[in-house]
Amino acid sequence: MTLGRRLEVPEVGNTERRRSSRFPIEREVRYKTLNQRAEILAGNGRTLNISSSGVLFTSDHDLPVGTRLEVSISWPAQLNEKCLLNLVARGRVIRHTKGQLALQIQQYEFRTQSRPGKDK
Image 1: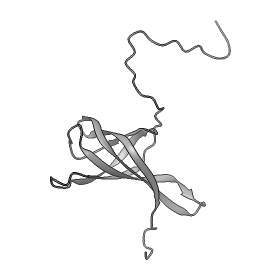
Image 2 (image 1 turned 180 degrees about the vertical axis):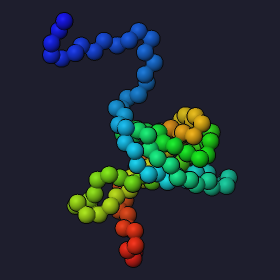
Image 3 (image 1 turned 30 degrees about the horizontal axis):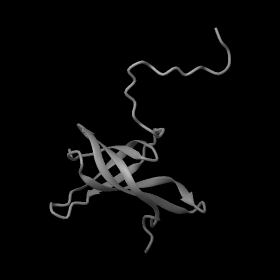
């Protein structure tokens, strides 16, 4: 028995390919497709986890791998402790299962959002 720090030993046959740690953050998300040649689909969901390179979220649409999306996530932190923020990210669907989409983030920015009931 060893006390203190646990030694991490990689499992044989481990297929984990993620380069970034995922965090189990549940936030509201809005998404829309970015294909100019097809009908634009839009929907709402909730994030299940997020990292610096991707986001997994619930979706009403079953979109194929490779679909370009823009997602807007209500961010839990505020700018200067008073201004609400959205994380707006663009990328491609890399995986989908029933009711869930995994997006590989290719670019992102933070945008301020207006408070509900306030004039713009």
